[in-house]
Length: 151
Image (cartoon, rainbow, N blue to C red; front, side):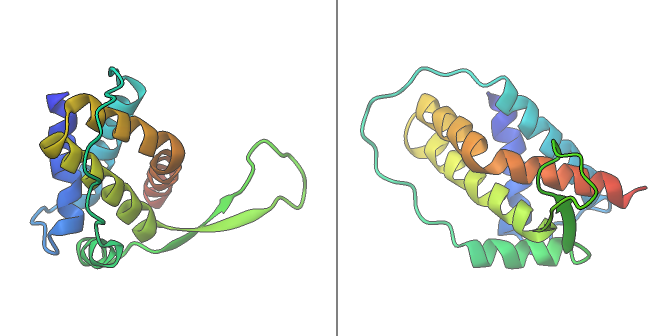
């Protein structure tokens, strides 16, 4: 899981540092997102039943401002709400690349905190849980949007 830690360190930098110095940030971001997704699909851990202190509340607004600073061209996009429906008047929704990335980063900061302050099994459980219940959809939506930007 040292690869997961490296990926988390790299992707969370976009949310904690307002001026990440890279010339190809979007390409780097795509690779990091794919790496995070691969780690999620292969995560294995033993449930840690110890009681630990709760992770801090990572300030979403600060993360969002840093993401905006690093990706000033990110913004709103439309998406199909249920891709299983095939009908003429399909229902669409609105997404936000900035919000997607900020949510992913916030969840990964909690995982990183647990890696440093609890146990690896506890951190991996947090990673699996947050991806399954929240971040996976943001990650998939953001990857799709980044792909469409290049078409």
